[in-house]
Image (cartoon, rainbow, N blue to C red; front, side, top):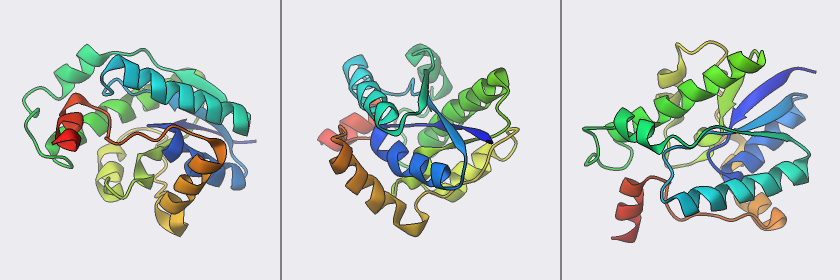
Length: 176
C-alpha cells in the first residue's frame, strides 16, 4: 500500500482529508506540525482532538516539535498583515517545509496538507508555495464538498473545533 504523509492543521480539517486519501487506497500517516498555534493550551487542545481522530481512523500520528519561536522568526515583519495575506503564506510554507522534511526522513514518497479543505485558505496559493517541495501532492480537499464533510465528521467523532486559524495574530482578529 502506498503511504502518504498528511500534514494535519487540525482534527476537523484532517477528518475528511484523511478519509478521502484512505478511500483512494492510501495508507495515511498524520503529521501534526503546527508551531504557529498559540497559546500552547490551544495547541494541546488541537493535538488531543487529532489524537482522537487517529484513534477513530486507526492512523499513525506523528507530532513535530513545537517550535513557536522558529515560526515567529519565519513570519517576522508580517505580523500586521491581514488574514489571508503574506504572513499566512509564510506560515503555510513553514509547515509545508517541515512536512516535506518529515516525509523524506520517514522514506514516505508523498505528502499533502489538510489546509486546502478550508474555505478560508486558497488552494492555488498553497499549491504554488509547495510546488518546489519534493513529493508534494496537490490535493484540493475542498472539492466534492470536503469542508461540509469535515463539519459532519467533526460532529460524528466529537472533535474539538476551534474558532480561529491558530496564531496569535489570527486570534486577535477573531476576537475583535
